[in-house]
Length: 550
Image (tube, rainbow, N blue to C red; front, side):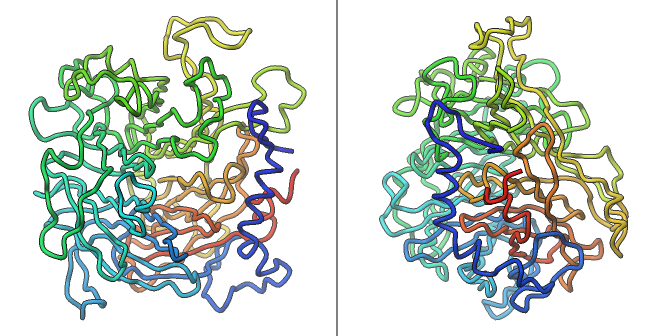
């Protein structure tokens, strides 16, 4: 087999694949590949595709979309929540009333006929609500059973902060609580089983952090009851519970020297399906999958990948941090929770840091060391139209060796003068802009908008993890990569959307994507072309499901 889990767990990929296939048979086999005829269920298709097709579409009221997420409701419905960029648009669900762009709620249970259910406007002029995370009340400690919650960021404006909404009734969301007066909020991560959230930003109060978009850690468990209507409550210190502000060295209020670039977002592996699995080169009992948080700093330049020991980051009962200096930590206190660090070149940043654990490539079988690897898919965001910048790619970073702080658990390496030696770029998932010249719209650099990578999917429980990953490449659309051999990833499928009537003059731009637990790819457009629901077919689907093994 090309990939297997760490043998210490006794969890072979064949067993995982069998379980996954049993749960997704309707998606994988309902439409046989030998029945393909260039379109699918009457849904219009782009002419620029390979082994990927569109199965559904929602125009999202023409709002420029950022991050899609989803959750399966207790009654079996699959609901997507899509964040947006700033501005305003008419809302046809409210008779055409113009609303500030906010959060779109879309029922995607029937992917061929997605239904827009509600739009939650942004709370103030100039605000953007780009990021959403969802949790079941039955998972969230203190949550109401049968209920569903979303947490969203509010970036910019007088309302800058984070909000919690009860979205049990998707046609009538109700506000629960908010934290305000925060600087530079953005793409957060929320652990449903604990309520802990890792939130870009910092307090707008002394002592001010040098990097405003650092990392706030809050506990959103035990939410209060939603209110029927009116402004969202801001309980102050009573809810949510503030834990600490954290960052890379130099971001803290007492830091010196150049100011580090901003945190784009962090991903916690605490709820990974194999959270108890030891890391590939575990040195101790705490070196397990669920005890790591991966933070991407820099967005599009001067990036850093930071690996955080979750236990050392959090206080009891979740960790061992003693609670000292939550607002203004020392350099030593920041480094105490840091398990690894990698600096990127000045022209590359850290946008998305998605970990993949326990990869054992077939090509490594005859070697005697490092046969199993842990990696992070690290994307650097393109930020300029028409390639008027350095090229931006997504990297496969080998984090098998996290640091050189202590005697390493392997025989052929020595301690380094650099305590943070270890993580390294293993390969690049790059797309040649000239590949677009095979199609009528031409070179990806000249299509009017940005070209280059933006982000990857982030779902540990999608049926293609850990074999295949998906990247949003702006004018390059959605690209699927076979990562079973992480030192040499291969592009196996793509779908480049068409522009439509809602797209601004600069054309379409695939912004972000996610893969749901059924295997559908939810891809949204930065310029207003809406949500495309895609699926793999052909050889790419067989590879992604582990059916076809090279």
